Length: 188
Image (tube, rainbow, N blue to C red):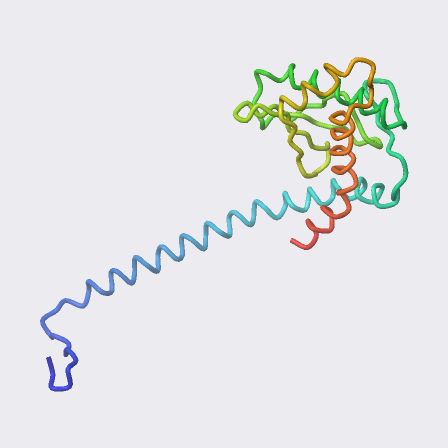
């Protein structure tokens, strides 16, 4: 120690220990930067493809405004909400039962569309629910199995049960949210 209370540098200490630590830190920083660049190089084209795919559907959704949605289940077209809700609940139940051996990453058509945009479904085996999204980049909505299987199974002649109408509202929200999602993708 010197007289001022600070340690002096001992000329006998090998300074290469400090340099090797700095060198390792520098190399780690370079590797981290290279990894981030690779991730972005892969993500940017995917994001651009998503923007291009969603653009026509988002424009159509924005132009539609608050008009009635055209729901197609199989070959039957619906503009009335109660009929569309009952048919959609049936299509979702069939998709849920048919996908019992497939995981949540395999989205497949459920036989329904909204305003010409196909609805896709996947079964989340871990949480026992049906995941729904549109065939263009969109948000995902989750329907728990108990709600899905209860929508219409014990309603008798009541074709417009609240669970069925709620399911229809979720699909409508996916569609009406496309312009906002498109704008969000463009900002990012």
